[in-house]
Length: 200
Ligand SMILES: *[C@@H]1O[C@H](CO)[C@@H](O)[C@H](O)[C@H]1NC(C)=O
Ligand SMILES: *[C@@H]1O[C@H](CO)[C@@H](O)[C@H](O)[C@H]1NC(C)=O
Image (tube, rainbow, N blue to C red):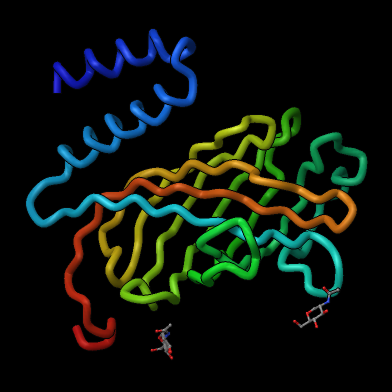
């Protein structure tokens, strides 16, 4: 681990010079580090997908469910609570492979910054992940390019999951209020079986 840390520090020093290449190397080293931390029956998983975040129109997948007295006058929409049911796709294109849904609550929870409190379940419906879920909590500071959230648990294949998620806005169309969000999850979990969840 010491050696790995040294390498990581070295990489963080020269990163500005090497740009995207170093970024990729860094990710590989970070992944390697996380992989080494997994013990016993734990597996390391990296999941990458996109959310179709439709804020407007008849088919919106994001809806306001509550707001506070001050929300309308708050520069950060403080107090607004939204419920979401976003389609998860393999690629940014909404017609790419469907992986599941992202469902939960998004609360505008910061009086001074565009900071959201997220409480989202990723519900997988594709392939071996079908029926398994991952639960994500955390602060989502919209002014940051990469937002880090905590993966706090999971069900099915992802039982005992823990880790973190990096979220960024891939695109946002202000005319149609259509956003595409990119998510990468790094998790350790215990794969207890491939069978239907009800069988054990
Ligand atoms: C809403 O979804 C329906 C069914 O997929 C589609 O026919 C319709 O064009 C959509 N409407 C809008 C405003 O996107
Ligand atoms: C996922 O599981 C449900 C319930 O068992 C099943 O109806 C559905 O066909 C499955 N979907 C895929 C893509 O395997």
